[in-house]
Length: 71
Image (cartoon, rainbow, N blue to C red; front, side, top):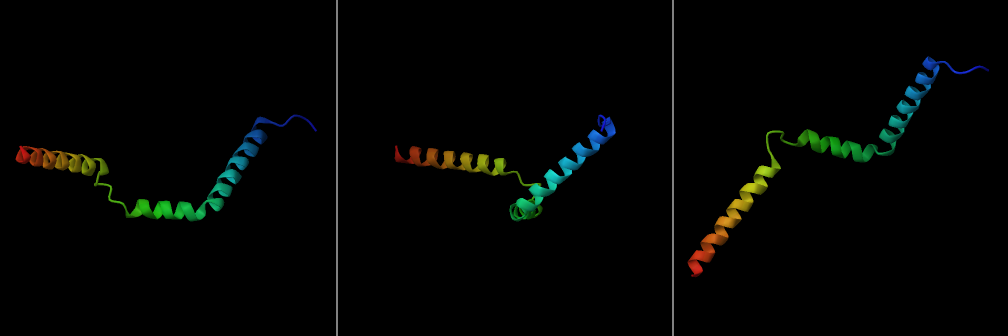
């Protein structure tokens, strides 16, 4: 047996990567399905960081109002 050609080595590497990907997909199928369904249900126009910032501003305003009324 001689040395493997570059094409043969590339084919073996691609096949190994495909087999590895398939093994991961099968092993983590329940988790991946749950994750993918939650992505499908999400609203891409809604930014959670905006909600957190708005809540922080509202909480700061409420505490400032309570502080000034208590004086």
